[in-house]
Amino acid sequence: MSREQGIDIRARLRTDIWWVLAFALVLYGVSELRGDKGRLGWDAHAYYMAWHGPMYSHRPGQMDAYNYSPAFAQVLWPFAHLPWPAFCALLVGAAALGVAWLVRPLPARVAIPVWLSCTPEILSGNIYWLLAIVAVLGFRYPGLWAISALTKITPTLGPIWFLLRREWRPLLWSAATTLAVAGISYLIAPHLWHDWFQFLAHNNNRRWGGIMPPVIYRIPVGLALLAWGARTNRAWTLPAAMCVVTPVFGIASLTMLTAIPRLRTNPATNPAPPSPRATPAPRY
Image (cartoon, rainbow, N blue to C red; front, side, top):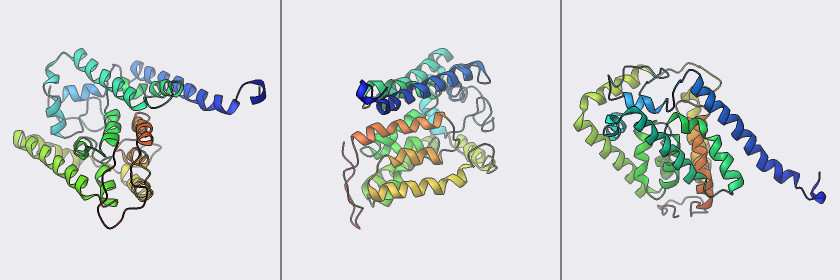
């Protein structure tokens, strides 16, 4: 069939490829439930178990390994007293709603399969969707970058974006918020922070364990992409660079790319390269 016969093949391919990808990733997500993961919310279960035993007793990659700072666990502490099914429903439901908000600017024929493509992330209960929201809202509310800094650490590229563009006010806000939250958390439970620092020091494995190289080798690539985006006012490069530098790269981590529709709809407002003077924060 051709365009003259009433079907735009190129347009159909642009839509149909998303449905093919969605079908494959839904199958992958369901297979994770039936495979080694064995339960809905397999990553969320690590957050739940952080308060039901020693917080840093598992090595990264092991089932129920909690890798984030004590501050994130302290935020979840009230919910960790719920029954596990309720905690799981809370995090999985939040992921589903968060991804739906991120893809809403897309046409429905694309938004639905893109949402379905995030099935592995939604079913796992991980927080890549939350970091995507941080990438979107962090321009207006730079303190939100504390969420990334106190969880997965390396995707905290918003402050570096501000630094590259000489946007000193949001840079200071992001740093001050992170330090304030970490300081309060430390005062509440200093021993947990000592445990976390030891955990990070003993688990900085640089060996090549999969298709993607270790994060230490990916960081320069991510920073180069970010620098190009900051200099040319391409806000979409921020979540793309976050994917590159995430500690564990996988299918679920690509959920951070769902920030792009919102960023392209509400781009940064400085079309020119940054000047020596501070530039205003992007508006939405």
